[in-house]
Image (cartoon, rainbow, N blue to C red; front, top):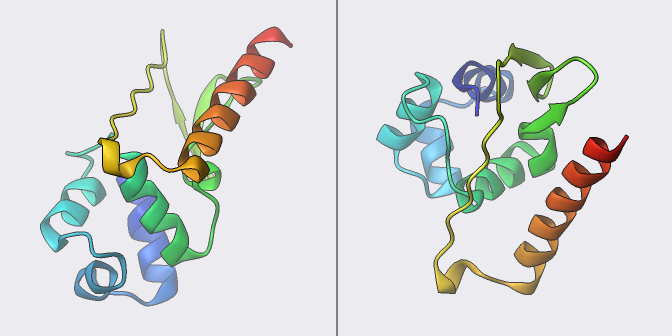
Length: 116
């Protein structure tokens, strides 16, 4: 996840790090790590909480634009070289039917784009 985009979303909403932390239940220090691009691979749970707070889909926070060969974090493209690796780590209590469907949808979208 692009920390600059998270910071931009937060500022557009008029949130401080404290406010975003309170609304999402994510520690201020972890949010700061994301914004400074030290933590670039937050869990699906974290992405889900951020998406809910910003009233966007998780897919709008992170998606791949194969035509341009870029990872797009909403309107903030980042050029990548080589392989794009995406790893999801969920504990048993994080696994819900809704989350499994979201993961399956993401995988299906990636497969369809590869086939095009």
